[in-house]
Length: 101
Image (cartoon, rainbow, N blue to C red):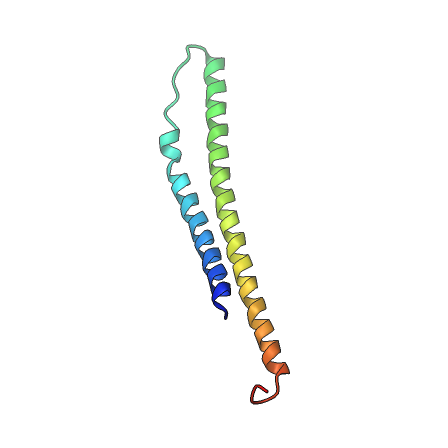
């Protein structure tokens, strides 16, 4: 495998790992971003504030899920790229006469 190809594979591996690590770190921020609800003195206002807080929490979880999804896609692409390279090398080896001449 050429050195530049190894660098690309390493970069893809690093990117996938980083996306998964950042998704986990972002999820861990959730509790600190969800303070307890405060009373606004009106039941309608309190209900609206709870709904907004739930929406923000759902968006937060959704973003972390998207980071994980992108990490999975990068890993899948890296694996497909590696399989393709192995297939091309195998084909080349099959086409070459014995002895490499």
